[in-house]
Image 1 (cartoon, rainbow, N blue to C red):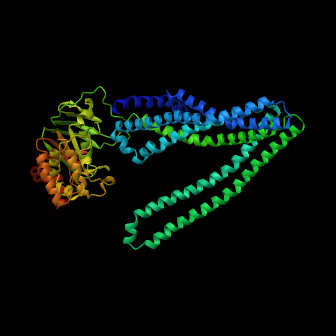
Image 2 (image 1 turned 45 degrees about the vertical axis):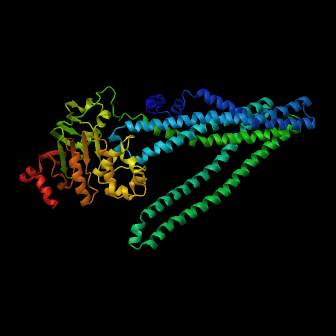
Image 3 (image 1 turned 90 degrees about the horizontal axis):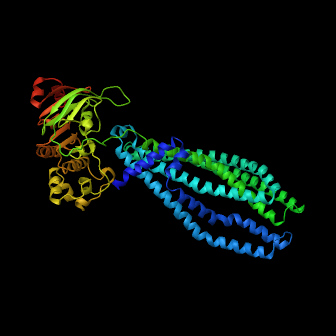
Length: 593
């Protein structure tokens, strides 16, 4: 899949750029290379759907032949029946061909678009992901792509069907009787407008009902989440009453919708039938005056209903298509974003010794001039353990993000083994580091899969060595399926300490040259914390290690401790040195006693 990712990305990004913000133009660009298949699908659709257009002509010919009022010969009569039967037989193979061609294009484009989005999301910078809600990105991946597929179906199937139907029926009507065609021109818009008027009123009521349903769904989810709080405070009756009121509002809204739909549905139906009667009366009068054959009354009656229905459907599709095209634009917001990590042409990293030099480094977010890190200088030797302490917002995590390469300095210079980080191929660099975040990130696979994430061929002895180092053996052996035990969502079937130890094991199994620990022991009890600290001391020996810690007792053995305040380093030294200074570090230590 990887070797196809870039061409897929280029195709879809180019399509959105050529679309230039125009949803319909972008949609057509996305199907570049598939136009012949779509044309074949449309042709197959026309053939398979043709009996619906031909049937009124056949019925008219039968009536005219039977009444003898038209010059329809027996030969024409027989051949019209045979031709119609042949078209019916063609329905099955051409329906299959139509769906096969159309579905092949749709599914290929839908999958390609999702794959392009997934690829782009992996390329977008960490600041982009932090400022963008994950639910919004998920909506683009799933809902907006579904809307894209829906609008494609409306344009390439329904709009094609309505267009062909209108073209055929209008052409036949105009060819057979310009007078009836003139009647259609006057009556069809009026009939369609009346139908739409009533349907819009129903749509408005339906929207109100849907809004109440959404409110109910939100309240029900909230109620389920609050069950422990509700039960703990004996508020069950109060909560039942609160949600019950919303359920009552939904009942009333649904009742109003049902009665409204019944009333105006009947009025709309009556209006349509009245126009049908008007068409019947007009064409019947023309037949009485011998201006059209008797059989053509049935033909025009059928075509009038078809045209009114098609015009109404086309008008109703316009807002649906507009909504779908908005989703196309929404997808473009991701694919056209330039907040990506550019590694092309940069120096690849084959080895990391672990020497870091922060030279007057400052950082602020692109949309905010406030410095999160200011004039930070620090030299780190290979194998050295550096701890960062300070209050929340002091800049500790920003330093870690700079080390990882998630952020790049906005001023100053950060060198890794003497190389400017802005000139390094960051993806190759990160293969030499391991990160344990403050909140463990687990997925719904087995424990083995979570530990060996991205490493398919880990020797069993090495795996168990890491499990022992992370003090996971007792937990793993207590589970019925051991390492193959499946994780619940976010590891909900494990304790916080167990999740964190799996996260630590995942980092350690990579045997990195650099380790980044962001409050890695924050979720552990005191006994487990002590064991993990002992394991980390052995495993971080000889590796450059960066640690962020709030509990100062966990960093007593760090080579140096940098005390951060307001984005600046105010003190640095080992534990004993900082305690003797009786400065900021000493004050933090006293507060934690």
